[in-house]
Image (cartoon, rainbow, N blue to C red; front, top):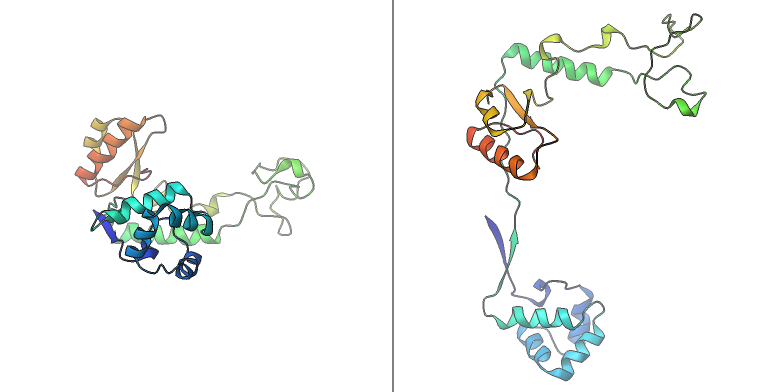
Length: 214
């Protein structure tokens, strides 16, 4: 499907700037017919090209081509949109996903011991192991330590945020084993462009959600 835009005004021309309107008006050009007539005149065309900043002979010739064809339309291609498939979830799974979202939002940022002292440590996590470590002993005035209490509900562990179970696929025939109601696919990173397009097309036919669509 494409959206069509007719050239009814000078302002509809490609590469046109608002500042050109006043400059063309000073030359007595306000309509598309007047602009076309001026561009077809060699001397006036040079005057327009010299006056309009950013307009050269190539753009001027392109305008002549567009304005010379009666009923010319600029066709702007729209990206093909595929409606996202929603998972079929029972009340228990929906509640578990909501609980997981709340726990994710409340979970603190786990920082490595003495990350503030040595810049080289960065913010990556490492378990504190020192025999005198206050952080290892979970003392309240030390930063939080990764522990089992911060995990999400087991029922939805590993689920995609959309609510689907992820299935990694590398070939088209693997789609036959996917349940589109509760599973979504993620195309492997080593899959080439042609095979990726074939997998995506087949998934759309089967109503399967593609998580890493390109």
